[in-house]
Each structure stands twice: as structure tokens, then as C-alpha cells.
Amino acid sequence: MTALSRAGAAVPDIAFEDRMATVEFRVAPDAHIVVDGDSCRGCTTRACVTACPANLFVPTSDGGILFNYEECFECGTCYMVCNTEGAITWRYPEGGHGVVFHRS
Ligand code: SF4
Ligand code: SF4
Image (cartoon, rainbow, N blue to C red):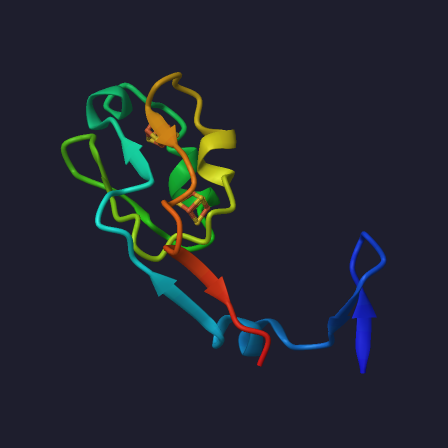
């Protein structure tokens, strides 16, 4: 059975857990997202911590943020919710790298 995407294209009817089981991360040597820890120290929301679907932002006891780009879904949510200009530098991974969603 298939469903329709917002654009009207047929997409496989697959459970979220099954879809996540097909995810592969082709890790690039250089981070495609860089977080400026100094900018984060004055942050009052820590919105990235709760918004990232991959739980890649971890607050530290000294007010900083630990971040690991390797299992990033490239959704851009962290960049959208961040309240401090310059705290997150975001781009897509270089060619051939990044998240891959297999169809089966
Ligand atoms: S929301 Fe932005 S400034 Fe705040 S902790 Fe996250 S990355 Fe840093
Ligand atoms: S792009 Fe999405 S998955 Fe990647 S770090 Fe930001 S919120 Fe998390």
C-alpha cells in the first residue's frame, strides 16, 4: 500500500520505526554544522536541545553545549529555533556524505 506526499507523489506506507531502521549516515570528515560554544553560554532557551530530533545537542554543567554532527538528519530545525545569531553555522554536507534514507 502507498500513501501520497504533500506534492502528490506516491510514497511507501511504512512505519516511522521501520523508516528509521533504513537510515545510513555517511559521515563527512568536516562538520557541516558548527556550534559556537561561547555564544551558547548566555542562551536562556537551549531550544536546540529539545528541538533536535536526533538529540545531538547536550547541555554541559558549565553552561556550554556539546554537539556531534555525525548522526544529523539535516532537517535544519536547530538553525531555525536558535535564538542567538552566529551560534550555529549550518550547511549541507559535502557531496556523497550525510544522511541517506533507503527505500527498503
Ligand atoms: S539555541 Fe542556539 S544559542 Fe541556545 S544553546 Fe542552542 S545553539 Fe546555543
Ligand atoms: S539539522 Fe536537525 S538533526 Fe541535524 S543537528 Fe540540527 S536539528 Fe538535529
